[in-house]
Amino acid sequence: MTGHIPPSRIIISRAEDLEIPILSVDLDTLTTVEIVDRAFGQVRLHEPIKFQHICQMIEEHLDCDRLLSELGV
Image 1: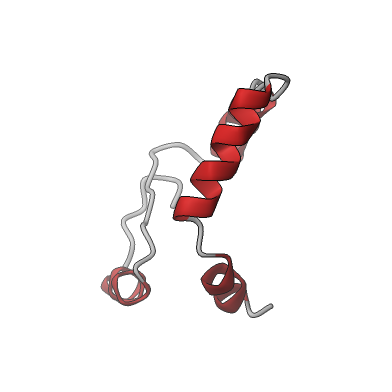
Image 2: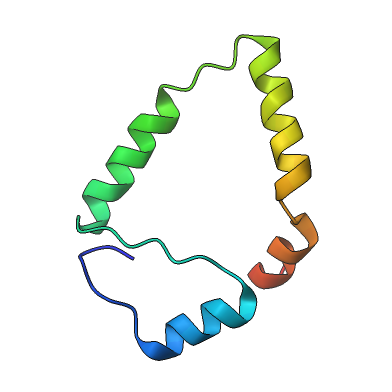
């Protein structure tokens, strides 16, 4: 959530039910997106070990089925 706006109790409750973390920042949405974009734009995957490590982390921590289900895909 951006803009230093606290989430409502309903959103917090729903996030807890779905075990989805809420990230809150003081910045506005556009600034936050620009910062995230710059961070990902600096990631270099030219080294095979980095790519392998990222694949391993995704495999261990990303529940693709749940993500797709939550997205309605």
